[in-house]
Image (tube, rainbow, N blue to C red):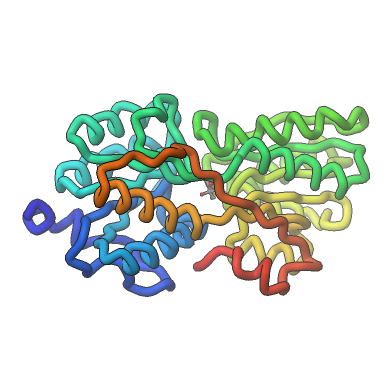
Length: 317
Ligand code: T6T
């Protein structure tokens, strides 16, 4: 079996707190390639994928690069393709740079399901499962506008240009705040998925604009860094921070008042649906009627964060 001869690929895999489900069955061999390791959004997605794989008797191998970049993700995808799995689920780290490597998988007749992020040539995938990121960005813009009473200077901190999800959040956020004539948009700064950079962007923006009113952090590490920067500057009462995602650190920051609103995605559902769609296709040979599956959001605040209906969507470590 290809898996045995390329043990590095199929014996490895990430380990999560959700247990070792979906790895031992005799059924289909699936691979999940996340955007980056050590990001609880993807850890939680992995939990959903493992639970579904276990239920359906599929084997699931999970891989990911140590940084959110196509240069780091491409060799992992290539190695997985070499091991000839029955299907691949992948969160591509760049809209354009990952088209070629994904096309190579498709050319070898390996069905590919895009989870979370997408690529320019998305029609080559069997299906896509993601949040509606434009809408989520709009929700963040509305929430931030509400937090700051519809006026003041706001900054967006994102990861880097070229990522479908965070670019769409930026689009939605900008659409939303445009409706507020008294909000002054300072533009977008990129932190390269590094919370330390996001914190120093926050510090330097506060130096240039001591009257800064709000920040939108567009993912886990952008949000965490914004929270740290605001806390270190002692400006928690002045600066409102809305962030995408709900990692344990973000939730703790919310509790402490470093962050004010979290737009939690439902990564567990993304992983679960991804595995279900792949297995259904492998069993029936029928392509899904609906190629885009959109999962939901939960808005998390200090007031509702212990509500069980909200708590179930907080990300897993
Ligand atoms: O926000 C998620 C994910 O949706 C995005 O594509 C990349 O960043 C995260 O993984 C969170 O860090």
